[in-house]
Amino acid sequence: MRIEISGQTFQSDFVKKVAEISGESVLSCNQCGKCSAGCPMAFAMDWLPNQIIRLVQLGIEEDIAKSKTPWICASCLTCSVRCPRGVDLGRLMEAVRLLTLRRNIDYVAAAKIPPDALGEMPQIALVGGFRKHTA
Ligand code: SF4
Ligand code: SF4
Image 1 (spheres, rainbow, N blue to C red):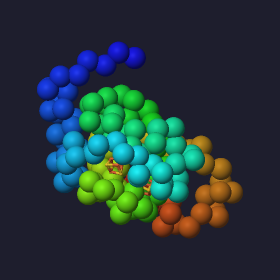
Image 2 (image 1 turned 135 degrees about the vertical axis):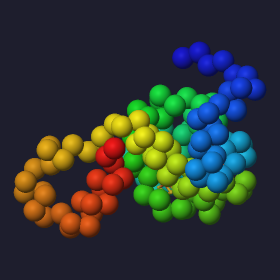
Image 3 (image 1 turned 90 degrees about the horizontal axis):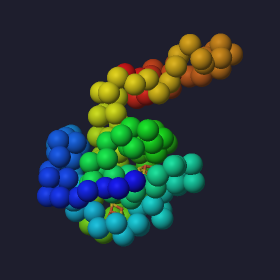
Image 4 (image 1 turned 180 degrees about the vertical axis):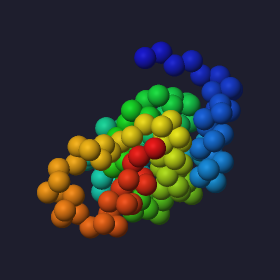
């Protein structure tokens, strides 16, 4: 994929929205990778946490929307503690999730959850899951 980078790339609406919602400076990240090295969920992610930040910096919204990484993120904040640049990646991930949900895409299809599983799941987990993963 060819990416054209200019001053406008770093000031795109998407970059501004992520910064506004998260309250974090997206451009502070220097891609050291410490967040990804310590992330306990990295094994299940398609893009590593530092790669998600790079996609945000470049305003590549489509790839972020398709990624499962923000939904795998457990919001454990290990990355936020480890970041030498003071970037709270947990907040950035939440901003990315919110912006993805605003695209009106459902990541959980209630109708496809087996009735047995529905009966066993804690109600609060279901409500929380639907809030987080459905538009
Ligand atoms: S630890 Fe911080 S500076 Fe390093 S890649 Fe992650 S977010 Fe960026
Ligand atoms: S908050 Fe998310 S991205 Fe950061 S270390 Fe925890 S699981 Fe990984």
